[in-house]
Length: 182
Ligand code: SAM
Image (spheres, rainbow, N blue to C red):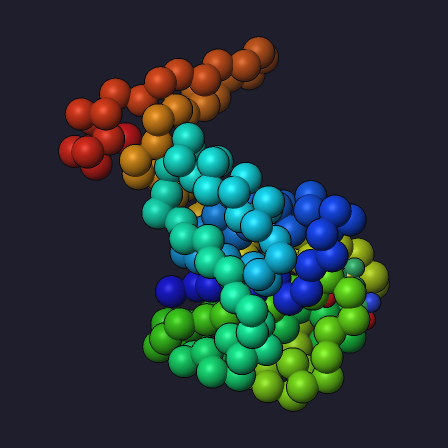
């Protein structure tokens, strides 16, 4: 299992970023995102997308995000510009993940120092300041070595038909999707 924890959320200001953390986690192969208790708007948006375009993907909320980090029954990766370069640690993280679940933590504002200490790896996607959404996307793609790009979705009501030009979204036949053919 791969879970993503969005640590911190300022309602209003962070709504789009928190939503995008969830959508990016879902699209690039994580199983679950955990948001803070005040991020209900973002949870609803992520769940709407999952209902329409498929899963499985779980959205949870917690009043105690630091406890989620502390008590996670597996390895913890904290994405931070101050960490070790992703290209130097990705092999070790992949090896560890073969043996068990992985929690990926991304921040909103300043991340408390005990998260740096609890993390098994503090990982930087470049040591330049940028975005939790970009950091998460690159990290997941490295973790899964690109295989997530071919993964398929179950239980979707709609799917995009890839086109060189233009936009096509078609309804998914519910019989096909329950057969797992979609
Ligand atoms: N200033 C905050 C701090 O010192 O912790 C970070 C704010 S940053 C906008 C929000 C989040 O983006 C961070 O918590 C981290 O998860 C992620 N992030 C930003 N730059 C990153 C990088 N180069 N590598 C990995 N994650 C990064």
